[in-house]
Amino acid sequence: MSIEVRGLTIRYAGTAQPAVRDLDLEIGKGELTTLLGPSGSGKSTTLRCIAGLERPDQGTIRIDGQIVCDAARGIWIKPEQRRLGMVFQSYAVWPHLSVFDNIAFPLRILGVERSRMRRKVEEVADLVGLAEFLGRPATKLSGGQQQRVALARAIVFEPRAILFDEPLSNLDAKLRERMRREIRSLQRRTGLTAIYVTHDQVEAFAISDRIAVMNDGRIQQIGTPQEIYARPNSAYVADFLGAANILTGRYTTEAGRTKLAIPSVGLAIDLDLDVDAKSTDSATGLVALRPEDVQVLPSAAGTAVETSVREVEYLGRNLSLTLESAGTELRAFVSPEPVPSIGQRLWITASPNAVVHLGPATPREDRQGS
Image (cartoon, rainbow, N blue to C red):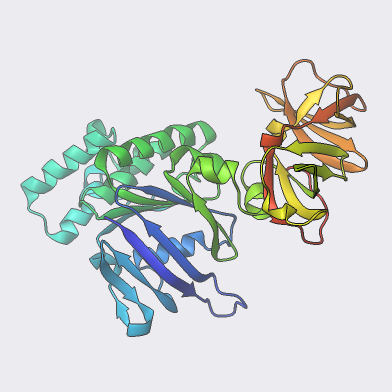
């Protein structure tokens, strides 16, 4: 079951800009695609338009080839007719109903025969680990168990696809980690096409076949987690995903070799690849350098640049260092032992393959990783 969105635009009254603007999105059969972005980026609005909970001003939506929305032609299929399961941030369980009756609710609405209903509820409850709790009041379950009830209710009627709107936001860190593994496992076992909305980058990387990074109502980049992390197409994507030092570089060509200078921190790097930004001598472009790719040395060596330690943060598996060079700060991740002291001198360098080339520079300040 595939989902195709074309030219989606929706405006809310009293707002200057559309919540979603001219958005295109294709999701393949059996794929889990995550819409990732900060609050207000348009990810939940996009999901709600697909679900039929919001009516867009422009655009078309197709589910498995069927047009469920075409704003220009006035076509609008109601949410209950789209046969999509949805799991919300709130558990949305009915407190006066048992676990069984909560899960069975969509089947009752559809008029499913009683014996088949019981069989389907028991099958799904077993799938999500709730078989022993079917007779219990839903409010007597833990938060994670209540979210399983919501998940079971969303798939019990065999939807064409399942939509997740920040489903784990109300859970503690350890439970979130366990539930995201369970959701991913369930999606793979059932083969359901899924769209997952979150602002949590770790969650998105762990659960997704593809990630669509959103901002300002648009998709900034879409690709596999590995693709968008290793090859972000803009400073925004590089900065939003994980941490990145966004810096301005100057490209020059000498004797057929391209050199990259980053004046703000004093780095000079010989590049082994062609870079679009170097089309003319002394062309400038933005580059990203991940903190884990900054090589930190205890003493001067080769072309390494001297820095001074400004901050040290302990992150468990590594230390996050804020280093200053030539008045510019940048971030580096290093081994937790030994722990540098504030003000200590260290030297940095980076390999050519660690540099992410982001295209032409615009007037702006260099930024450390965030």
